[in-house]
Image (cartoon, rainbow, N blue to C red; front, side, top):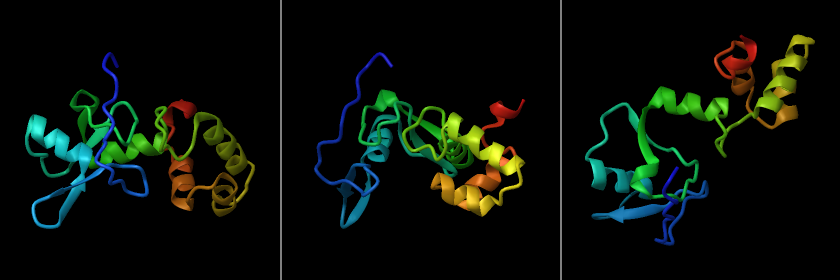
Length: 133
């Protein structure tokens, strides 16, 4: 990215690190969502605002893009260098090796600190597809 992140300075953050802002009577929204809507207009149903920079506190409109909910979820599950990815390329490779050796999904999930559904998605090649081509 050619432009630096603009970090939310409103002082109100979620536990996950997203900025929050109050709009109207008691309505609180993510700061990056409010920024996106102020810059580009309403977010269509079925879409979410994604940080291209990977910085949850960033409110630079040039770092924000729309992704369908399913594409946004998939992006975060497969890694793509994003800070909130559940598995890295290395851990996905090791996890798959353990699955191929017959270890139960739940045991692999516990070993890597992720949910069994994340390991199941790996096993079914719904995530980290590029590793199994």
